[in-house]
Structure formats: C-alpha cells, structure tokens
Image (tube, rainbow, N blue to C red; front, side, top):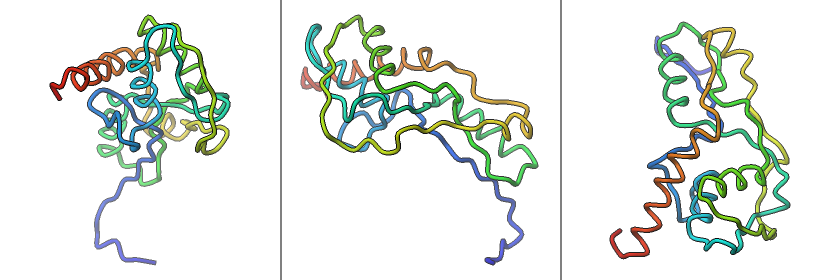
Length: 163
C-alpha cells in the first residue's frame, strides 16, 4: 500500500461534464458539445450523424454543478470516492432532440457505425446525498441552452474566418 505522506485526499468521479468553453471539435469533445456542433453546422431540414442507434443512455453534468460538487467535496471530511454527476438519464436520441429544439431546427437522424461505448451509464448519487447533503441539480435542458449558444457562435466564427 503506498504511503499517503500525511496528505488529505478527496476523490471525485465525474460523469461527462459539459458546458460553454469546453472542447467542441477535433475528436476530443464530449457528446453534448459534439452534438451541439453537429446541429449548429447542419442546415434546417438536413441530417445529423449519430453513432450507433441513438438508444444508448448517458447522464451529463453541467459545469456549474461539477464545480459546486468539487468545492463541496474538497471542503468536506469525506474520504470516500464520490460520484459527481447528474442522475438525469437520457438517450442520445433525446439529447439530439433537445438540442434541435433549442436551435429551432428539424433534422433527420442518420445512424452510422462508430464507437458507442457501454449501452447505458448513469451516476449513482446516494453517497453524495448522504455525505455532502447535496447533488447536482441543473437540468440537462437548462445547461444545453448556454452550451448550444456558445458552440453555435464558435461554428459561426470559424465559418466567417474569425476564429
């Protein structure tokens, strides 16, 4: 067992953090910003490419909740690993539908082969509720609005040669 050198340690296990100012292109982006980019780049009535069948499920945590959870964990006496993630589970299809509504676009989903990861993943927040008396509370839709607006602006600036 490694020595801890008398250091106090906290372990947060994050569940797909997203929001404005995150990576939005280049292959390293998370699903919410990747889908925001795809919707922003598509013309109304066009297509959006989705890896797999879109039925895989995930939970996504808005950056403000991730920061708040981190601060609460660091200020606590909890030495157990804690999930910092939303329990709001959605399919990729539902995620895309939400982003399309925010963008005011109607897009056709085109399913293609690609990495899909596990079929479903969600945060179990029992421990964070018990130990920190808190859990992430920003609904996916509320976090997607500023995220989409920011990604859409980035796409526009690239298209105009500004960025």
